[in-house]
Length: 147
Ligand SMILES: [Zn+2]
Image (cartoon, rainbow, N blue to C red; front, side, top):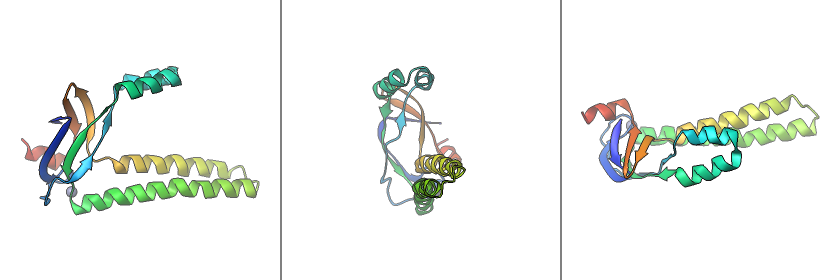
């Protein structure tokens, strides 16, 4: 894992594949929150949401991201977002044609699309934040270049 101040500019190399890039000019604002907030949320939605907004930390990083990984990221985001949007067409068709089985298709497309969108949008993943110091998961080639 990479240890970094929560606001920092990283070296001008892609955080996934370690390719050289002209500048670390990709603004990443990953959000971290303690994982126990999820357990509280399962017990009480309201308290969980309040704790999420209270305990979450938003990082402010300038990182390197090569052309290929920028392209992969936007493809995943457009694909996932497109699938989630198309889910509503399927839902509309299910209602119009009175075919309740299309509701399952709606759920799969919508949830699957959002998961692809969320995972694809990620660049670096904060695993813990203590004070002003964050520990983040990055691509293996980038991590090994720091050793
Ligand atoms: Zn890359």
